[in-house]
Length: 606
Image (cartoon, rainbow, N blue to C red; front, side, top):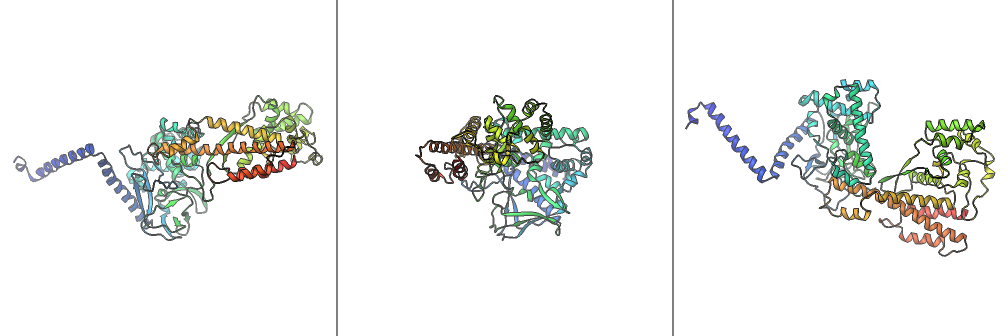
């Protein structure tokens, strides 16, 4: 009755107010008693954002009618399909927030060689746009030595544009659909999540990445203090990882550049690749073309390239369960650090050889050694042992399950470390010429006497070598001798054993843990960490098996040299063949090839 005594407009306001109170009471009740309701409400809001984003693209000439964006609360693929990676940005199921698991799907059957997406140039954010901002100009003129100079200018543009232009920015619909958090990226992991990487070299890379981003932030603040007004360090890190995981390397107007391409950056990773992308000058647009037919409703993938899981995890926030190519090759790798033992009696000589030709600093030392040797003032060993004692001598080699350039380099360095004095003299000098020969080699000269010296043998039965001059320790690509190769393999096994001992779990425990998808949920940071360390251990176990197999074969060769031919070399290789297969427990073909060919050649020489 009181309400009807009021004027009509006031009665309407009272009624709307009471309706609003009832509405919020209902919503509050639903949220309290039905926690999933808030996700539904957020999804409605997100649909509006995605709709605005797609409308913005279409209004500016983009084409993607054959595709649609989808957001996932949970993985939509079969649990047994481990080859699929659904996420750029990980969703935490325990959080009441918007989902950051997204993908692009086909609306209809898409034939091969079909342009399924075209994004016009005006919708791209390029390096040049960042350089043209006031902040970008200051950074460009300062000539700073930044960790990621190309990424910096893309970061500067989105940080500057979002702050200065806000909702009036041309790119505002794109900014709206960027993930608000990047908690799947290791640089944002909690200490508990990082603990899953204990023993892994990736922890060092994560710390280095955080330090490099902070260094860039403060370096830019020194020359452009207004960066601090645009963003905090945490926001700068967010921008860095957004750009790192989304940018495309393109050629536009004949120049190489990097760009953020809205919508195209929503495609997830899969190998082998199903699509290809480029910037087409005649269309003045970025295009994605199918390489094979894609059925209706299927997810449409990009390929981020053939990469080790540590790069996927560090830069994109995921690790691939079965990171193998169609030919069986796995690019997962692990670094092996090598250095000269300070307690080695030949430390001075080995450091001289170890550091030869590495960089300008070492080259300067070599030049000084040469001058001193030629003037008879001192020996190169004396000079090297004093001047290089404080120089960094650790060499890191990244190896994978393959007989590639890096694995050959690893064995070359191991042979140098395994040298005794006689072997070291043989591989670092020619015909006893010593320091003078070193100097001639540095200037690209040859020594004719070397040809005669190559025919002499050193070390007797079971330890013979064929002397040869090597420009550096990286060049010993063939065994020096049986003794040296055995010591090299023993050293490799010692390094591998030490590396495996740094992990709190074994490879067998990791495999068992990953079979428990309740304890290690799919697409969780916990699972990705476990996938990463499992991959590292597989590589380490491969080289441990390599070292053991090599020593077994060399045992046979030594017995043959002593007149005992049971079991024979051929029989041993044949036994390896029975265990050479593609499963994780079999002997990899690279080990078999090394034992049969490399050690077989050494056997014939012996």
